Image (cartoon, rainbow, N blue to C red; front, top):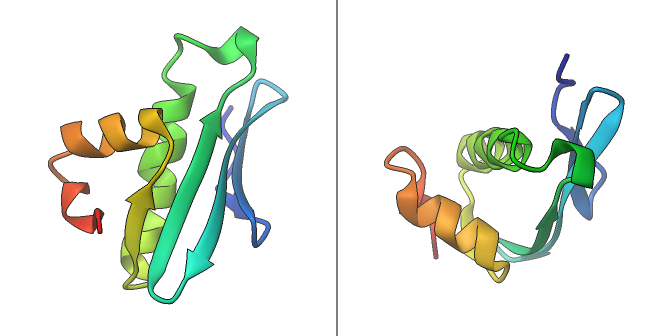
Length: 89
Protein backbone atom coordinates (compact mmCIF):
# COMPACT_ATOMS: atom_id res chain seq x y z
CA UNK A 1 0.00 0.00 0.00
CA UNK A 2 1.21 3.49 -0.88
CA UNK A 3 0.63 6.38 1.51
CA UNK A 4 -0.55 9.82 0.51
CA UNK A 5 2.07 12.41 -0.33
CA UNK A 6 3.45 14.16 2.75
CA UNK A 7 5.09 17.60 2.56
CA UNK A 8 7.38 18.37 5.49
CA UNK A 9 8.31 21.81 4.18
CA UNK A 10 11.71 20.60 2.94
CA UNK A 11 10.89 17.13 1.66
CA UNK A 12 8.06 15.34 -0.10
CA UNK A 13 7.63 11.78 1.19
CA UNK A 14 5.62 8.69 0.28
CA UNK A 15 5.60 5.41 2.18
CA UNK A 16 5.27 2.07 0.38
CA UNK A 17 5.67 -1.30 2.03
CA UNK A 18 6.77 0.51 5.19
CA UNK A 19 9.64 2.25 3.34
CA UNK A 20 9.91 5.96 2.56
CA UNK A 21 10.79 7.45 -0.82
CA UNK A 22 11.57 11.15 -0.72
CA UNK A 23 12.38 14.27 -2.70
CA UNK A 24 14.38 17.00 -0.98
CA UNK A 25 13.41 20.47 -2.15
CA UNK A 26 13.63 24.16 -1.39
CA UNK A 27 11.46 27.09 -2.40
CA UNK A 28 12.55 30.17 -4.31
CA UNK A 29 9.59 32.42 -5.01
CA UNK A 30 7.14 30.52 -7.20
CA UNK A 31 9.67 27.74 -7.90
CA UNK A 32 10.18 24.42 -6.14
CA UNK A 33 13.80 23.37 -6.61
CA UNK A 34 14.10 19.58 -6.43
CA UNK A 35 17.60 18.78 -5.21
CA UNK A 36 17.43 15.02 -4.70
CA UNK A 37 14.99 12.13 -5.23
CA UNK A 38 15.61 8.76 -3.60
CA UNK A 39 13.89 5.47 -2.89
CA UNK A 40 15.20 2.80 -0.51
CA UNK A 41 17.11 -0.03 -2.23
CA UNK A 42 14.22 -2.47 -1.66
CA UNK A 43 11.88 -0.21 -3.70
CA UNK A 44 14.26 0.53 -6.57
CA UNK A 45 13.00 -0.78 -9.87
CA UNK A 46 9.39 -0.87 -8.64
CA UNK A 47 8.40 2.58 -9.93
CA UNK A 48 8.30 4.09 -6.43
CA UNK A 49 10.30 7.17 -7.41
CA UNK A 50 8.07 7.70 -10.43
CA UNK A 51 4.94 7.52 -8.29
CA UNK A 52 6.51 10.04 -5.92
CA UNK A 53 7.37 12.37 -8.81
CA UNK A 54 3.84 12.10 -10.19
CA UNK A 55 2.27 12.91 -6.83
CA UNK A 56 4.57 15.83 -6.07
CA UNK A 57 4.21 17.22 -9.59
CA UNK A 58 0.42 17.14 -9.25
CA UNK A 59 0.71 18.94 -5.89
CA UNK A 60 3.06 21.59 -7.29
CA UNK A 61 0.78 22.12 -10.28
CA UNK A 62 -2.25 22.48 -7.97
CA UNK A 63 -0.36 25.16 -6.03
CA UNK A 64 0.34 27.08 -9.26
CA UNK A 65 4.12 26.72 -8.87
CA UNK A 66 6.95 25.71 -11.22
CA UNK A 67 9.69 23.10 -10.79
CA UNK A 68 13.43 23.55 -11.20
CA UNK A 69 14.94 20.06 -11.16
CA UNK A 70 18.56 19.91 -9.97
CA UNK A 71 18.35 16.15 -9.46
CA UNK A 72 19.10 14.22 -12.65
CA UNK A 73 16.32 11.71 -12.00
CA UNK A 74 13.73 14.47 -11.48
CA UNK A 75 14.86 16.27 -14.63
CA UNK A 76 14.67 13.07 -16.73
CA UNK A 77 11.27 12.11 -15.30
CA UNK A 78 9.84 15.55 -16.03
CA UNK A 79 11.21 15.56 -19.60
CA UNK A 80 9.38 12.27 -20.23
CA UNK A 81 6.12 13.38 -18.60
CA UNK A 82 3.64 14.83 -21.08
CA UNK A 83 1.37 15.85 -18.20
CA UNK A 84 3.98 17.70 -16.14
CA UNK A 85 6.90 18.78 -18.36
CA UNK A 86 5.29 22.23 -18.60
CA UNK A 87 6.04 22.75 -14.91
CA UNK A 88 9.78 22.91 -15.55
CA UNK A 89 11.13 26.40 -15.03
